[in-house]
Amino acid sequence: MCSDVRKQMTEDRKQKSDSVLHPPIFIICLLSSDLCPLKTDTREMGLKKIKITAIMILFAVLCSACGYRFSEEGGFPGDTDRLFVKVLENRTQETGVENIVTAALLSELTLRKIDNLASGIDNADVVLSGVVEEVAIRTISTRKRDTAGERRVTVSVALKLTKPDGNVVWATKHLSDDEGYSVDANNERTDQNRRDAIRVLSRRIAEKVVNRLSDDF
Image 1 (cartoon, rainbow, N blue to C red):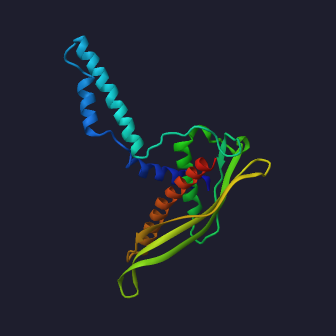
Image 2 (image 1 turned 60 degrees about the vertical axis):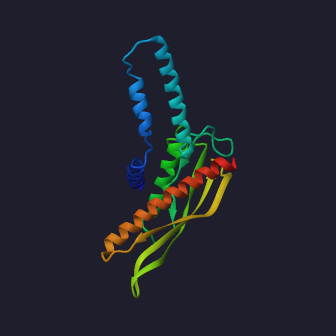
Image 3 (image 1 turned 90 degrees about the vertical axis):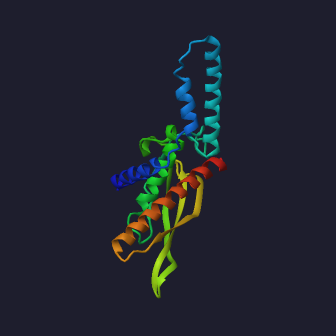
């Protein structure tokens, strides 16, 4: 089961790499021209350094405006520092959904709290565990009479943070998200589209979880 989660995390990271923020072209052009000056005049060099500093500040502002957070300081709820993520329990008929959601949680926590993840449950101050409560599917459009053209899948989870002594320091229930997907004449393609949709919404669920952990405490 752990190998399935690691495989899922690799797939999630590959998809995330396609959306990595790149510096605007005008910043690259200015930096490339200013870092290799043709003249050595001291005054010009000073002006160039000021320009480079201003550009770097602008780039940082742009990154912040786009919602990118590279890390978050502080520990987790309950005055704890090291968190371990346990593979979620699956209480639905959707095979493997627990691995997809768990992988999304690990990816988001690694991205935003990389220094706070425990290597194992034995050296963790708190454990994040939970269940996939429901996977619901409904038709949202049709191609022909009685033939679905697009469906929407909704995943709901319940999570909690527990200390080694059993004390629950944080919990949430019925946390859900949904995503539409196309229905193909080929059932295997439809299944793959549904799985891809679950991966997308799982990343959003993971973002909500980490945001709540930060906001609530």
